[in-house]
Length: 459
Image 1 (cartoon, rainbow, N blue to C red):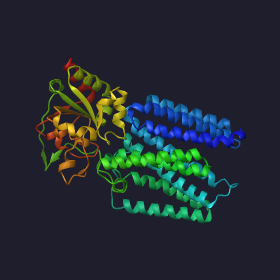
Image 2 (cartoon, rainbow, N blue to C red; image 1 turned 90 degrees about the vertical axis):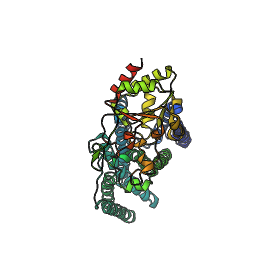
Image 3 (tube, rainbow, N blue to C red; image 1 turned 120 degrees about the vertical axis):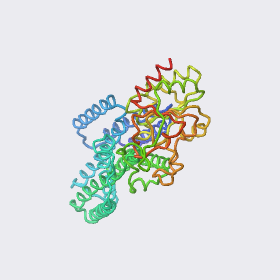
Image 4 (spheres, rainbow, N blue to C red; image 1 turned 45 degrees about the vertical axis):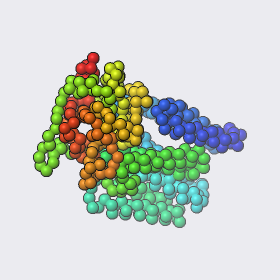
């Protein structure tokens, strides 16, 4: 197999091109399936080529690891509900970080190999990014799954601890770089793990979509750093692609919230899930409530309807019933479209995946920039399971934590129907003035049950 070594870089180049095509394909729902296939073929080529050129590989252990990983991945892919997809993505990121840490530790303990100046830098960077990625992803998984709660860690001690841990981590890393002392490398690794916790724990629920995207970027850079350590060009390329694309996506999402990336990471979150019923100056606000039949009547007699989906849609698994309802309206001549906010749900693209699963036609799904100009000409906007992405406070209340955040301008439509379980605040913990407007009707209940009742009233 060593005779194959001269051709390995050419195969790696083909794999890298396939990875680029995979990212290009994943940029659109219509080409996402092809993009996934490109990525799978590219990864298959990369794995087989690496095995072909590796010196004395233990094929038994490698095969067992591949089978175990494939079995777990296949089982999880088939069984994970859409409500658990964000935390599943977060925990997968943690595994990439852990792999980077373990490879770096194995490399520094490989006493038969001398590490050059550049290699020591690569080991240091890859290991501490991997360590931060691992614990940060575990904390994100805990927040998203509800096991740790979405409430951010607060207190005047947080930022000094973050700075202290970062400086100590860099200090021990520098000491290892100069002296190659193993204890310094271990201390640097432990500090990076602790720092990962303190970077994510202070971030509130409203910023978790950006956190998931950011951790995706971290995992990519960790993989790229270890690629240098292993002298594997395709791992460097793949890690760099993941790292840069995750960073770009994080920037796009921060811009969608009118927040800076540093503000999200070091400024703490926008709130938590723990907010109770909306009140103002100690007085309960007044809102108008209706039934599913009332909502169905409004939309059956409308010319145009825009549906704004949110995380509550995923929780109730109502996407299929909602698509049936939308089709029933379309058959009556109603122009039905879906409006997607960049940070709707708990991870980037969450709502797009949810609607694709229900086979919603791609041409009906519009991004915020495409749909906002049409709200003023829309008869009814159906907000189902969403909250913060339609909050007018982002445009009107300078004291609001989300002031300046671009939103879906549902409040400009003629009528708004909001489906919620209760009047509790959304994931960012903020009240929503949209719910108290004269044009708004609240319909309380499980989203799937409400949509099914609206569908019955439509037939």
